[in-house]
Length: 264
Image (cartoon, rainbow, N blue to C red; front, side):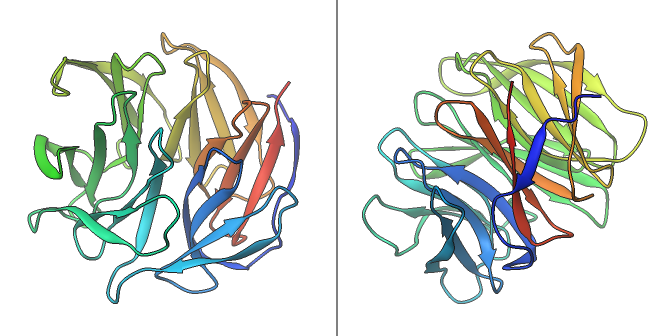
């Protein structure tokens, strides 16, 4: 097991247990949802100082966050079945796409051409859906999956990874030119603990949050287990990287904070 140099990036419990969606903008600022209270987004500077970035519209609670190449922010709003858009230089959330048949959009991934993908679990039934958001419209790609959660696009934009928390499986698809997916196959599976957020590093390795185990599992682009990072908290919900890929930031539900790991 690879221990890594993991430390607290923010103070404990300044985020709620719903802390999720870490994402870094082009300037290196880190964002995560549910700062001090549900329905907010917090921003953390390079020194780990957190402050309120914005409050989402009434009734909306964020989960996954992604930035496009122009620094526009997209937020999965799981209570109102939306993907929200906060344009660069603003703090007001607008509805980018909505579908009332969504369960509760959880995490987001974005391809190099700007197409968004959203996981959509139904925790009660242990099922889930997979969506594509394109040109402000949501398109259902697959239903009757397991509890879809972590989601990521490979750096070259050719593959989509989706995991199922309860079923402990990671699936891989090929992405077509129009953004649709095909050739679904099993990428990796685990025997214990849940799966949560995922991210690819610049080489295409997959970093998977092991919720309840307190680790990040690292898999190669072919699904081979490489190593594991031990965290301080036991409930990592999601992960992202600094822009130079020398650090990863992990949101920790049981500690209400962000941990940072310096990568070797």
